[in-house]
Length: 137
Image 1 (cartoon, rainbow, N blue to C red):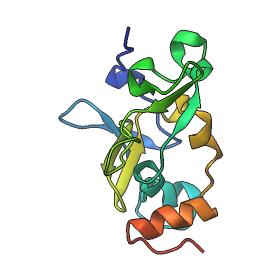
Image 2: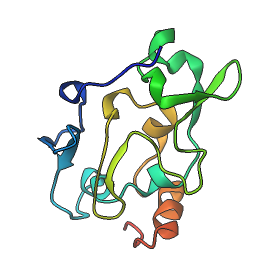
Image 3: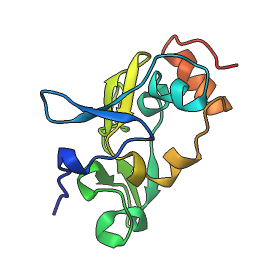
Image 4: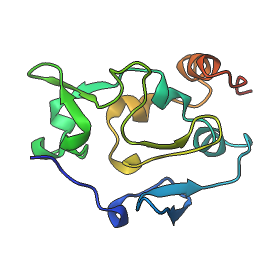
């Protein structure tokens, strides 16, 4: 059974939330690159560049925190964030426009690969380059 996130249940990273006409929340944040949070919420390239595979034990139904409805099975032990196996890649939890203003609809519940990717890392820089965004310094 898929878990449906209600707009009031969507949490975002340390930013004010705005409810849009579609009922989803999106981060409200200045579009600058002075901190990692700013760089991430005005970027989103990683969410539209990489396949996100993770353990089924991170699913809500298995005692984790990732909503089942946003994951597709890969094997008996692995699942994938919906949208990250499409072409073009775009995680189903991502809202907003790449390179302008984005937010993760499941930020506090995102899987480990999302937690592990750091702003300014090689993976981050490759994702930014794929979307024509300048490197972080």
